[in-house]
Image (cartoon, rainbow, N blue to C red):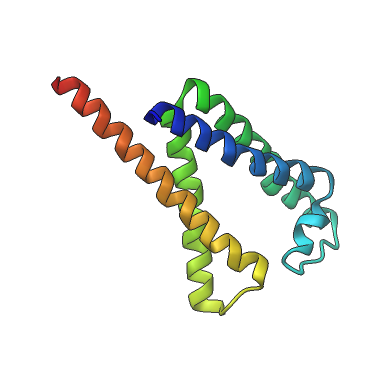
Length: 135
């Protein structure tokens, strides 16, 4: 399988759960926060959850899908930064705050894997470009 197809599949596969999180948080922000035992008791909390987990995730998902077909390098870079930021925050919290619940413990590894795969695909893409330029 060629690198372009692998990247396209990866971006689409990542976009789907990102889209689902975005939709759920946009329409039912409390459902997202139930996973981490946080009660959104005021409009500000609901607004922030809708914005970050809802609106932002919807737009990331849309860009990952667009990027799969039109801007793979850029979509991979955004995904790599996004996942790396999540993973860094999770590992820092693990060190400072202790072990999270099973839901978050799973996401530590999912986000770390997404970051590593994204950076790896970006590196491969760069190497392929260099190899083509030298040929």
